[in-house]
Length: 358
Image 1 (tube, one colour):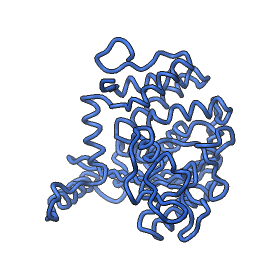
Image 2: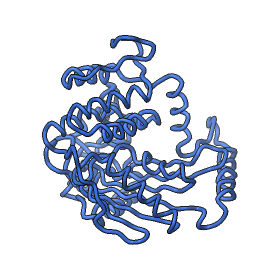
Image 3: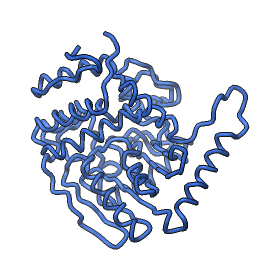
Image 4: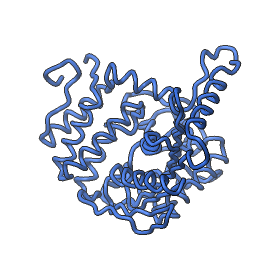
């Protein structure tokens, strides 16, 4: 099969059609489609259209509320708690982020948590939303399956519990950190399996402590935390802030959404937004960020290092490339999406510069 590339609008339209066919209101389906397509555009391929099939499976199993009443249940001047009513996480966190931005405009800082949400895609999707308002975004979440034991233990009681931060700049690309508290996010493991690739050593180990390289055997081991025991501690703290604080699932309460498609996950997330203008001149702040970026990029390099990258810079370059060339989909994923289209009775994806699907 020749390369199968698609545009962001094609992805968004296809995903929206699939969601609408299942009973999700058209406006909500469009939001979900655009956010999932953006995940692929920025290179977060473990959280983009690759997630469509499992989302559909959960919907068909009755595990998601297709017309949720997403509402604020606790609120003060600079904070709020949102009940997602078991709706799609993308809808919950878009609403939470927009509320945090609105509050930060008047308070200088805001924190909005969620409960009864679901998987919402890559963390940086929501942290980045603050950038359009010249604000800083910070995102935290409890992962949707436990793949990490406490340091020195074997029971899976913690997840990848991701963190994202987005910081505006003036002329440079913004600084965007998006990381799991494990060496690799489980979405990357799923993407490796989809492409038929092996994992590098250091991502996972088996229950005897030996390297696990085959992503199709990920159930036989667990992910490794970043920085050893420090990553374990960070995962715990993020889980408390995004889960326990909100009344969402944490620890043994977390549902493995890769295996259980019908039980409510009660996923917890949190978004914090900071307005730099509350601290001083926004242009001066962004100029200082640019200066810092330049210092880091131009620092003396170790032998063999061609370039020093800033967090989010490679993702920025991927987005630019995808805007020109389209997103490349793996053959196995294309086959899965064509089968899904037939199952749902929607038009299949076609590659760029083609009038008919492969």
